[in-house]
Amino acid sequence: MIARLRTVWARLQLTLPLRAWKRYGDLRGNRLAGASSFYGFVSLFPLLVLSAAIVSAVAGPSGVERVQDIVNENLPGLNVNVSTFHENAGTVGVIGALVLLFTGLGWVDSVRAAVRSMWGLDDQPGNIVVRKAWDIAVLAGLGLLILVSSGASVVLISFAGDVLDWLGFGSGGWLLRLISGLVSVGASTALFAYLLAGLPRIVVPWRNLAVVSLLSAVVFEALKQFLVQYVVGTATQNSYAAFATPLAMLAWIYLVTRLLMVAAAITAESAIDQLEANERAESTRALQSQTRGVQPAVPSPADVLTPGQVRATGVAAGAVLGAAGLALAIFATRAARTATSALRRHDD
Image 1 (tube, rainbow, N blue to C red):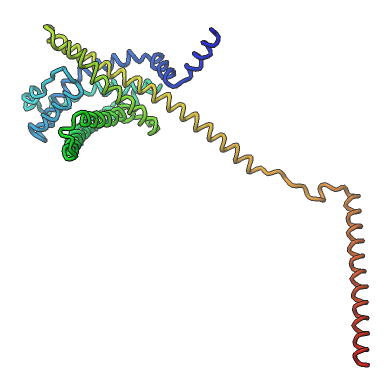
Image 2 (cartoon, rainbow, N blue to C red; image 1 turned 90 degrees about the vertical axis):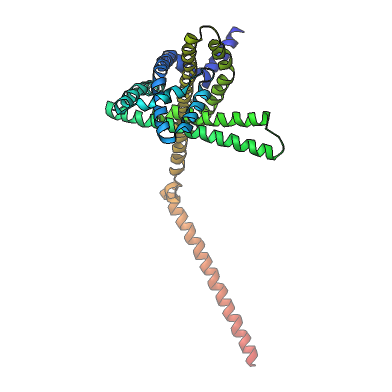
């Protein structure tokens, strides 16, 4: 019984989830998530101030409302008021924006280093100037992705509500909530794909990236719907809400970052599996091509027969040809005689 359990456990250790969990533990995934969570918590407010300043300058108050909706969706129950950042956004000058940007880039740097560490890659690629330039571009791309996906989600959910109302389902009820959940999962899938591949600058097989990002998005939405309602909601409603809210926010960021680290470990292990499968397929194709290219040589009769057999074969062939020629000559002579006799009878 014990031997069988050991065999089963040994087989389970070869599965993708357990190998990914082992990678997560061996590479200190909890510590990486903790460091990234701290930088994320510290960088959150500077990024919100900078986002409010940029969006208010471009889209006005409606853009700030859009940022507020994004914050409420991804940090539910924490009551983060973006309008306070919007009120002070006018005082943000060029120098202040650079300081806020430098502070906010700490989170990008920590997440990039953590995800690359899960792959066993250099966590500080390139020189610092190029790296910071890439971090700024990645941060801008992340903000654009969040705005676009959030706006698309609002449009799709509104359109779905109109369609359901036109079909006679009224406000939609559970069906509209289901569609809203699917749209949220799709937006979160795009976000996790960006965090797993775009932000750390890692080339990931698209199929592995899509599957892992989708699973991460489902878990992320489940955390938002269940854990946040009980943990964060309870923390913000007690008499210590002034202290509980930042702690609850830090705990939420830590949970999401741990999910990201586990997803990075799964992505790395699945990429290794695909690489090994490709190598095996390439080896098989190379072996098959070598087998087809080297054909066994068919020996000629001269290579098989001995000199005596070759001479005997030549004599026999000559005898057969001579006999055939003699028979042909006799047949031709008799045919000529028969034709001559027939002509003489005809003349008589």
